[in-house]
Image: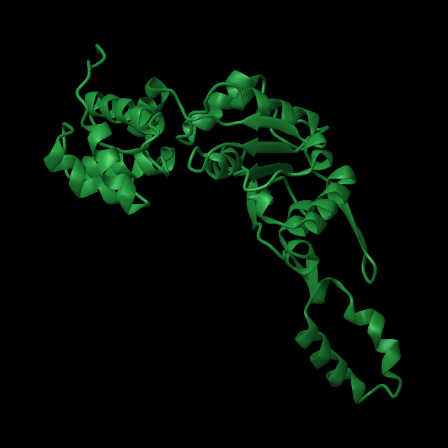
Length: 300
């Protein structure tokens, strides 16, 4: 059922939203379903921070699928400007139209208004999200963009509309669910954060990570999923590892083991799959050692 005031599916509670996400193989940790539920019902952007690999980007994809919404992604980078984020004009097509019509019109200046219509407008991610049915707009790694882009976002997120001088106003009929992510390579301005609801995504507990691994790695044995999750907790808690793997990497590791029909962690099974976890050569030995530390196995 659709909420007529927001244009989004009516979700009864945070638990109901968590159940919808679980159907998309995404198990939200503590507080994430609540924050997303509030963002959805209040029509506010959701600002997600957390270590790389904890599932920030994947969350936006999965909630779009859970709510049957379009998924639109804007990857941020230094120098990102209005033509990449909002809109641009198809200049070559405008020139061709002007030349084609020029033979019949002595005064080409009268043709100019006709060159700034929907036919010639390139809608970039933000404008795409404002147009049409419900959409989840992911503004990924906003900390990599410049201050000027943050100022642009402040303006857009104030009223969910854009004024294009040559074209007119574009205003959302259904407000998109905007998800901003940051890896904290720099501090995002407080003015932008104040527009948003905020949530820090932590690494999952071993129990939750084991459940995630079984969801995302078909064929993985339950006992092995627990051993991997326990090992990952040791890896992330160690000061000997420069770049601890995130959940995305542990999923890849679990899939590699499941594909090889591995049932236990030992040197012969861990080392061939280390390429899914290790991103720096110096971390290879510490990660292998920490995964293979013997420990008590949880009771079924």
